[in-house]
Length: 480
Image 1 (cartoon, rainbow, N blue to C red):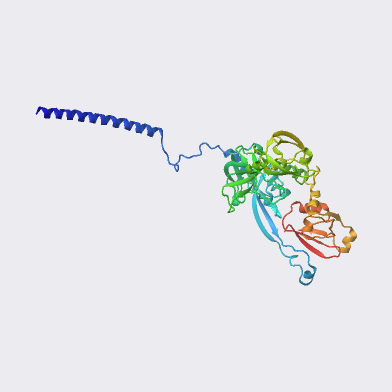
Image 2 (cartoon, one colour):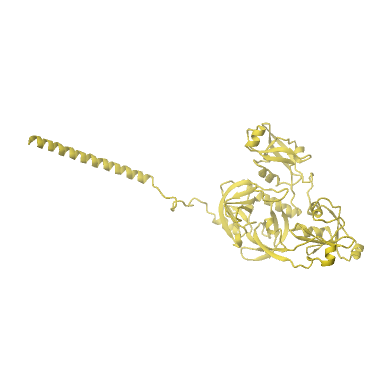
């Protein structure tokens, strides 16, 4: 009995000890679990935890800019034209002479840049237009005059007869930084006064969209949604300042799919100033053949530092050759602006006029040097080209008025003779020397000024009408 009672007592004491230890351990563990749970809350990514609480307030920028963006509506007459065939015309007549034009309508956007009615848009928005109409944000409508166009930057300048218009102030596209917020304002799908937001995702983008020999493509890239109809609209910063003109989207479907591109406002300012003063953009050229300096070129040329733009060739008599640039030099800066690819360099040079003096910082064999260049025009001199002169160069001919005796013998009341035909657009469409232009479209031509005005807002499908000295009439399509 004594042994039994002794064993039972020991068992009871051991059980109590075990129960006490278990209770103490469980309490400690639960306390640790609660501590971890309180310190590390877990939230699903699909809940309201992912907010834009830290995004800037863009309402002021939107309100300031939306009234300065207009809806651009265009009307185009699609009229077919054909060269003169005397045999066919004798028996069958000219099938295009009395054919009614077909009307087509399109739309885009534009940005008011002055209170007296100057508006910037894309060249591709208005280049085919017979008539351009502007609709303001307050629904007022005006017919616009095309002041000038620049296909090489895809910009055009319009003017409406109005005063005290709301306009958007110029910003500085050089100060735009990747990652900063931007607003795209325009009229996508004819939905007026649409504002979308995004960030600047890149600068100096060349997307090879402008089919021009001397095109400048150094676009600002953004992920703000831009769609058809936004072309010509504003890209503004968080302060509501204009930093670019929306021009293109990267898309396989024709609608926005992630990225859009805008012409930098510093290029816009230069183009507008030239069109107002000269009627023609004054393009300056450095006279070099350039390559982006990448790893492959660096390895080939044994160049360790890949900053800058590589000079792979020089134009004889060009600004660079005369200024001391040599093949193999690496251009690091234009004035005080760093350039790291060809589009950035072209953008900087595109801001100057022939005759302007610029400084280049170059790397030559590991040594930096500063060179001074006097920029030239495409003809290799420093002259500023007026529009009438550039028209003669582009068309590839000279022009002379015809006297009253010739008018009487040819039974015409007006006309302008084509002389000294050389390489150019007139030769390409089949016009021969001696041809007398009487009409371009519906406009009568009797002087070089008439010709200049008729072509100032040049569009595809213009019909040139006239006759040869033997009286044979002919029709040519310019730009078809």
